[in-house]
Length: 126
Image (cartoon, rainbow, N blue to C red):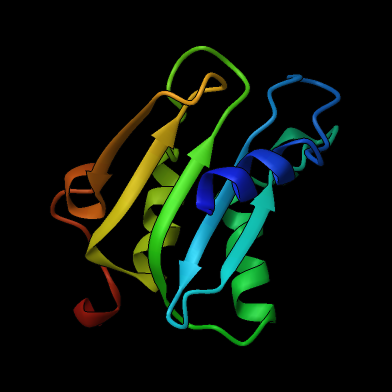
């Protein structure tokens, strides 16, 4: 399941600076699960969010679309995709895709990508 996959990969996060582990899991078009975790870098702008890591895995494994997303952080607050990752997700997910935002205790809130990224700019705009 997405929650277990994201929780497991979260432990692999490379976070020597923030100590904030994030895991992301995507459901693909054939119902496979693709995961990613955040990777920090001493040159902070070069860090990679868990969702971006999972998108790299998605494409590397030959998939082209996301049916569902789950993101889990290591804190008590729900972990939602940052603004940049919402736009990254928009490239591979439709606006009605469900985004599950979780905390370390398993509490969850679900929104659509459209709710998280209103008036979005996507591939069809080009």
